[in-house]
Length: 328
Image (cartoon, rainbow, N blue to C red):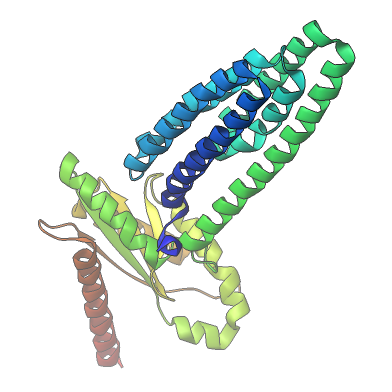
């Protein structure tokens, strides 16, 4: 079941579990500190346990919403404040608590806020130790914290890059660089829902590279792999910044045009088709493109709109074949 969840869906569930386990661990630690007579630490940890439990419950209840993440900020600030407050009296114990903050903060917060938070904690910790326990202890502790912070930052940054790379691989066609079919229906469904609330139309333009298989047979897959990214790039130059291009089949590219009626899509289609066919595409002498445009009609969903575009392209192809046969 967890394997079917995305990273954004899995993160709040993991945070809730980790916070509950942390509250249990702190409870065990409180018992040990009570036996040793460290009563100020017991009182501090008594504040940390409700903070962890409340955060875990809040995050789990709001796990499917975007609003759950704000509770991590007061939690991490509370933990750091408690540790820094007890640092002058218990420098050795609190230093070990603070050493756990870099990794924990990157688990709770986004990269930039977590980095700023850790830099502030490092400065405050060094100053408090310098004022109460001398320069050497402050320097040694600050250096150790900085090393832990650097290691945690590298791990968090590499994890973030990996997530971006996996997301890009999941959404794009690796040969052409355009968005893939899977992302097409997700994006089109989103635009249709937005158009229903804003009363603006959504249109699609289909571009089919004629004789695609014949071009591969003549020039080879390597040449076509070099041609497709250039084709996508030059197509993107002809459309607006908010428009998107998708590759739904080997020879079929679809432009999604939010806030564009069908009449406007037809005008844009003719301009894009004419521009692409007039450009030089070495080593091809020329390319021929079939194009068609459809606008969203009332009651249609993403699949209905895509099917109507495909049917229109097929009808246009049959008409072109019949016209070519008649000319012969």
